[in-house]
Amino acid sequence: MYQINFQKPIHVHFIGIGGISMSGLAQILIGAGFTVSGSDARRSPITERLSAMGAVINYPQADCNITPDIDLVVYTAAIAQDNPEYAAAVRQSVPLMTRASLLGQIMKNYPMPIAVSGTHGKTTTTSMLSEVLLAANMDPTLSVGGILKSIGGNIRVGKSDYFVTEACEYTNSFLSFFPKISIILNIEADHLDFFKDIDDIRHSFRRFAQLLPADGFLIINSGIDNIRELTDGLDCNVVTFGRDAGADYSYTDASYDALGKGTYTLLKNGKPDGTIRLGVVGEHNILNSLSVVALSDLLGIDRAVVQHAFSHFSGTERRFELKGTVGGVTVLDDYAHHPTEITATLKAAANYPHKTLWCVFQPHTYSRTKAFLHDFAKALMPADRIILTDIYAAREKNTIGITSADLQREIQNLGKDCLYLRTFDQVENFLLENCIDGDLLITMGAGDVVKIGENLLGI
Image (cartoon, rainbow, N blue to C red; front, side):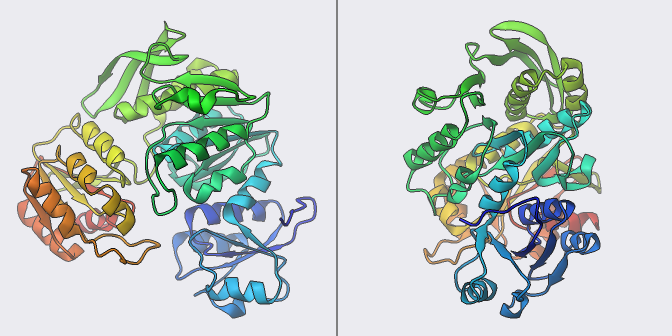
């Protein structure tokens, strides 16, 4: 594999530079003195910001963008081998590297690389941890999978030993990393277009845990099924967190304020160790915060600093994000695209003031919709009113013949009324005619469903 010498900056070209992760890596390289170019389908605030930093960006992707002065081409798992720029790089014998491999090589340059993994909660937990490190004046370099308001984006280049990143299991990307501390939040079936089954996924997380050195630490949720299968025989130190009072870090006496924000008594080794107040909603974020408390203790961060950061952290974009109010209707947006995430979001919404809870759900990818069809239907049940949009294809083509009408039937078979409206205009018009003062509307999904709420709000 091509090895980058960070003491000798080169010209790196990113295929699809406008993606949230690719743009972050590009920004890190720009800060390290590299020449950066890239391509994307269209302009966006992200690409415009990179251009202002000195990157040369072409629209759209084309083989002529691979010029002779490029030393390395970086691509994501979504890029096929017939992509014009990928094919041009192969023809011209330009070295190619995956996004995950580049991130792994960047991690090697930091004495304390930290990776946050799990099927759910990576972005929120990475953001929560980032806020703690910033509050502790530890000057970290941060790579977040969403927009963190306090840093005005998804990337921050610091000058300390600390590097924090999300670690995604899809296509085994996280196996290219070199962490010193890793968090595993949870492990569930997902990305079944790549993994064979849950056992295959668990095997990958076990391999991820094995990446840690003997003086490293794995912080892992004690509620994961058969956790010892993942932790037995590891060279590293293991710290547990979870609902179980037998975990190293757990909680009791959880309560929620009028907006669903959690407060709990922290238990460390089963003994009360102070009260934690969060600025984010839901029990799932209590669990996320426990992992951050555990890591903060490992780094010697004062608990008062941790509490200050937690209280002021209100979440990242597209994670139970308050978008605004129109006609007395509160509009929230959430990235949930897996049944477990939907359940957590709607459970949190139950603690939020409302008359009728509306959920506009956009399924994400055909393979995921088919794999979890019944589970999606059950997860959506807590909503008072459910509206489905067309499936967001993302990287896929509909070779399996599934549509949102199939999910609609599953929901109706469970005794719940459900609408399937194909266009956003239809959804928006229906909501304008039927939502009333005091209702709560959540747009939900990993695609572009957020536009519905934004259009209603005129933003």
